[in-house]
Amino acid sequence: MKRAIMGIFFLIVLANGLNAQTMMNGLMDNFSFQKITEGTYSRNNLKLSDIQGTPYLDANFKTGKITTGEGAVYTDIPLRYNAFTDDLEFQKGEDTFNINPKTIVKKAEFAGRVFGCMSFDDSGKIKNGFFEIIKEGKATLVIRYIVKFQEKEEIKAFAEPKPARFDEALKEYFLAIENSPAKLISNKKSLLEMFGDKKGIMETYISKNKLPVRGEDALTKIVVYYNSL
Image 1 (cartoon, rainbow, N blue to C red):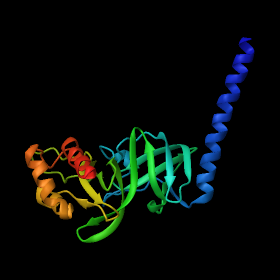
Image 2 (cartoon, rainbow, N blue to C red):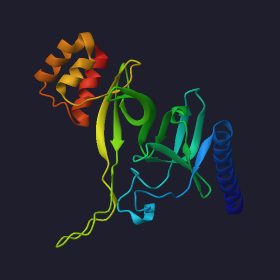
Image 3 (tube, one colour):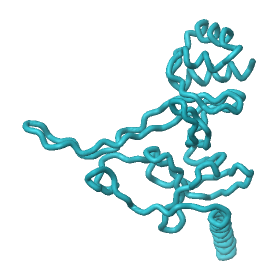
Image 4 (cartoon, rainbow, N blue to C red):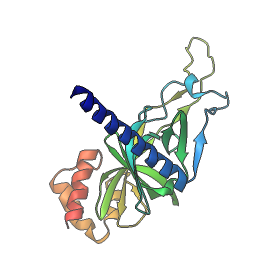
């Protein structure tokens, strides 16, 4: 009996492994990807291993799911997000690839997060980028992660030089109304302007509830209320 149970368990594991491999092969067959090799950073040609910090929200790959703009779904894909290059990366065997163009991805779900590729207003220029989706609706609240790279400091007298490093990821909150490009929520005024003819109603709601126009909790409440109107 024990041998039969172990045999069934082995077949289930094998089937799951083959299914994951089939999904990965399907993803690779249907889209073009760029293989990532360890490049160099900065004027000093440093490798990633020479730099403090990380460009990733989590350097470890987490099994997740990709949904494309055409509705195709690929599961059991090892994924991670590079906030420095704004790339969604996946792993096959020992090789790492980034998804290019990123507009292929409608949603990527992994490590308890949901990312989507969206158009956004970058100082008047419309670009495409990955955002973590916080709340969806006619108004969609998203986070854009920014990781900056700092060059190694030159040696100075009486001061220990700082090594080359990636700074900790910063969050920028954006709001997309209907199908318009997402816009940065820089202050209360910028947020209210996005609400158009509902500006007055939203200003009253924010003031009455003493909601700061910053932080995920307050912004989520604001977006949920707007979506209810």
